[in-house]
Amino acid sequence: MALRLEQKQAIVAEVSNVAAKAYSAIAAEYRGLTVPEMTELRKRARESRVYLRVVKNTLARRALAGTDYACMSESLVGPLLLAFSLEEPGAAARVIRDFAKEHEQLTPKLVAFGGKLYRPEELDRLASLPTKEQAIAMLMAVLKAPVEKLVRTLAEPHAKLVRTLAAVRDQKQVA
Image (cartoon, rainbow, N blue to C red; front, side, top):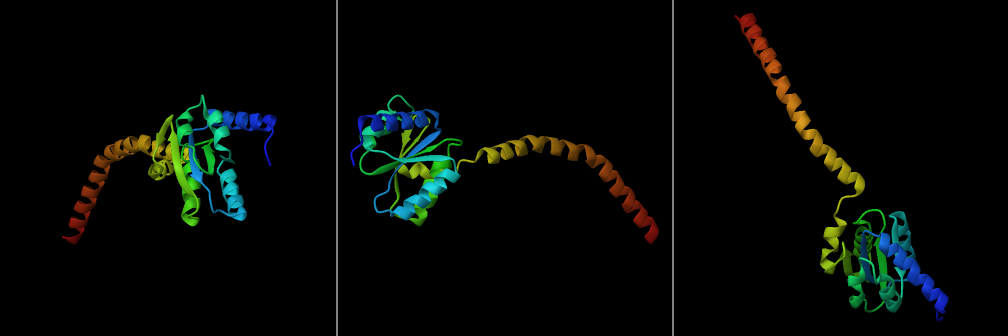
């Protein structure tokens, strides 16, 4: 069924609005996936706060124009779905990577992050970026380490004195 002009304009506006807010974008070829498999992919995307949409390439080019993902426009060829990470940069990459491991018909074609287009092989690097909570935990561990070392260093002379006195006491009890 052909789309009317108003429907096309609404799709372009929606995708453009999402692309303007997104941290990263993935385009993947979905040829060969069944309807239940696509439904499962959409469910996983919703759970991860990833915007997933199948859009005609001509409409996608118009929607991506003027955004950080305009670099993808020239490479949009074939049946593609677009996945945009809305909360963290690696979310869409994780969803596509994990689903592609189970369903070989889904093949990543384009990876865009920070206004640059990367090869599909870079999907794993983007997917391995830590989540916000993981990044905060890593930062807190880095900030906590010097304080812990300082406390251990300050406590060591007292601990060494106690160990020395205990050794002297044990030596006198044996003698």
